[in-house]
Image (cartoon, rainbow, N blue to C red; front, side, top):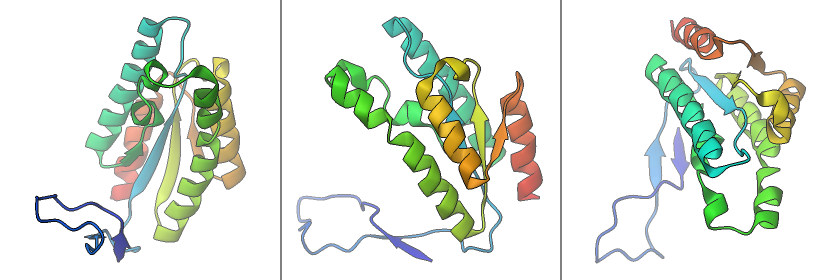
Length: 161
């Protein structure tokens, strides 16, 4: 299967108007697991926000090492609040629940399993609650536990086997 849109290495001679981008991905029959990391992002202090980002990053790396395809929105938007006015950032964050739906539907098309690891403190995060609701509407697997990452690592390994 070919998916357009991935950027090749650029050089001085590149004419971006005439370049075609393609990448080969696993065929739909390959068993893969897509894991979405959900949990608090913002905190009352910048240090608290950084801690939330790092906690999500650690979970993402563990699951990636277990063989999952991981989407960690914390890393996708890490510290954007330093560069973007507050109101647009809040509006932008609300789009992640829509992204959960898109990822769930896309993973079904590819024949992949999709799960969500919900980090501690999710109940204090309106964004995480919207993401969880979207995942439940899509019929995805949700893991909520103190050892959620360990449980998800086992799920990924079992799914790969």
